[in-house]
Length: 223
Image (cartoon, rainbow, N blue to C red; front, side, top):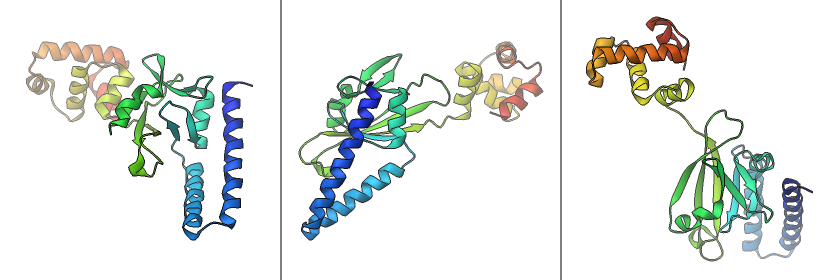
């Protein structure tokens, strides 16, 4: 059985056992405990229905809970990976970094947002990490890490740099041209010579496959 299948089987068994235990306890529970059980059941239901990938891990990175969206990413190794011990790692700069690497910073009260590398490319994604402690209802001390994964919203300049491999200056120039600014005025705004702007525009033609400023601007407006 591979790691993903083992995780899925153990996660399902644990969830079923927890649900059965909660049901048996609720029949004889104190009203306050009964309310806690209802809230726990409600939280589990919301977690299962949440479309945003979300998982909870301990300080060592072992996954305690994961909604279906997060489980699918883990199974596909889509930016996330489980080692043989069931501890999660994040893909960073071409390598797998254990989640526990950031535990100390999270225990200090920081909330971290990190880029998440995806093997298939596509829209850039990021993962947000938050440490939970006794003040959040955790039994004792720092012990849980809540992680959510979401798509990064790019500015138009960043989107142009990503799509056409524009330099930072070329992205600024592109935005100016999109606003109707003449190249001479753009040169003044950028603090460069008009010849430099023309060189940039020529390079932008090559990168976008366009042959005139009108074609270039029309294409950039579609980004």
